[in-house]
Amino acid sequence: MENSKHGKLDRDAVNKILFFVIIILVVNMIFALIISYLWSVLDFLVILGLSLLTTSPAFFANGGMTFTGKGDPIDRGKFFIDGKRIFGEGKTWSGLLGGILAGLFIGFMFTLLFIPVRNFAGYITNLFEWDLVYVSYNEVLSFVHPAYMEILTINGVTQVPSIHFGFVILGLRLVLLSIAAPFGDLIGSFLKRRIGKERGEILPVIDQIDFITFSILITYPIFPLRWYYIVTLLLITPLIALIANYVIYRLGKKEVPW
Image (cartoon, rainbow, N blue to C red; front, side, top):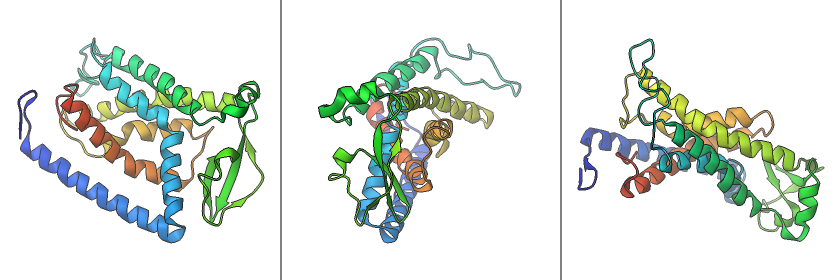
C-alpha cells in the first residue's frame, strides 16, 4: 500500500489490522444482538450513547495527544532495564499536557450541552446534589436527567428513588478521565516496548483500549459503571480509535493509520 505523503505501509500490518477490524465488527454485532435480545434494541442504543457520553473526556484527551505531541520525549531517550526505550519518541511532555488540557476543556464544554438551560444556575450552585434519575429496566442502569427522559426512555422503564450527585462529582470525574486517558496511553506504550514493538508497529487491542481501560479503572470508585457499559466501551473503542487514527493519518498527523 502506497501513500505519496506518508510512504509505503507494511502490507502485512495492513492485513492484520483489516482482519482485526472484521473480528471487532463481528463481536460488536454479536454483543448488540445479545443486549437487544435480553432487553431491546433501544436499550442497546441508550447503553451505547451513555457509555460514550459518560467517558467522553477520555476520548477527547486521547485525541488531543496526537495534535499536541511534538517536542521532547518523556523518557528523554533513556532505556529500561531490558535495554529497550521506556516509552519511545512518540510520547512527549507536550502531548501529555496537551491531551489533559483537551480533555478538560472540550470535555467540560461537551458536558455543558447536557445541562438543562432553564435551571442552569440551580445546578451550578447546588454542588453536591444534582438530581439524576436512576432508571432500571431488567437491571439496565442509566443516569439521565428527568428533562431528557422523553428522549432517552427505555421500553418498559421503571423509576426508583433518585440518586444525587452534583458538580463536585462530575468535575472530579472530568479531571480524572482527562488525566487517566493520557497516562493509560503511556502504559500501553510501555507495554509495547517491553514486548519489542517499536513506534508505529501494530499491536491490536492494547493500541486501542489502553486509555479507556485505565480511565474506567481510575474513575470507578466515584462513578461505577455496570458491566454492560464497560463491555460496550471495550468493544466500541477499538472501532472509534481506528477510524479516528485513519482520519488523523490522512491529515498528516500520524505516520501510520492505526
